[in-house]
Length: 329
Image (cartoon, helix red, strand yellow):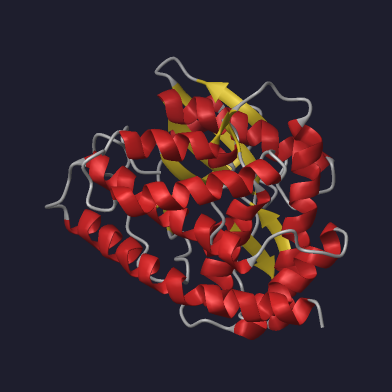
């Protein structure tokens, strides 16, 4: 996520995710924090984090078992705790997610450690089978999220958050276009189901084993809002079917599989999906505007990426329309 006051997020200009690269570290503080685990080796993923102990770790136990650990602090730790609980609940309901081995351990300095099962970082293989399996797994995830939504306290809707962000940059050059799109997206959301959604579907957050979805990961953007399945559908189309080049065949496979797993129909038009996709881009641009870092090269890369996506979405609606039309043949 991008801060509203500073910019620390790494750019992701391409489609393919970069696997985490781990290097050995001393890690005695982790052994002290997890004394019941016989940790033989500690490795940390590359990256500058604040504080220095924060980040992602691979733990090798004495028996050879691997574990994955996230170390966070403050608000990030609080959100990760909620995300871990949600992921665990979904896993117990049979969805493709991870049940953490332990949800949270606090140290005196405020760091929190979250330990998950280790899964190899294998990503989408570009196959039609893989994209069809993604559609089915995402539909099943949404069904289970809908089940959980009924037991949660009322949450602010993602649409309201989009409105709030736009209100914070009232003079932005894109404001009028974004307001128009928000009005249409609001009507679309009001006709659909308000529920939890992942809200951050991209190729790095879906782990595959060959063409099979093993797990959706990183539920931090799901835990504090209600949303709509359309948000994840639009993101799935964008990152798996339309980039780097639009594929009507992949879009059809994804949507057909999602529709079948959801009960046999897709309750959305290409226009509605495109509206949501455009709103997602504008929301990211609004956050970039709030981060106030226009001279930062990474900020510039992110801004160019989302500006380009805005243009692409206006053409992608036709590809999605063709894919949806073939669902009804």
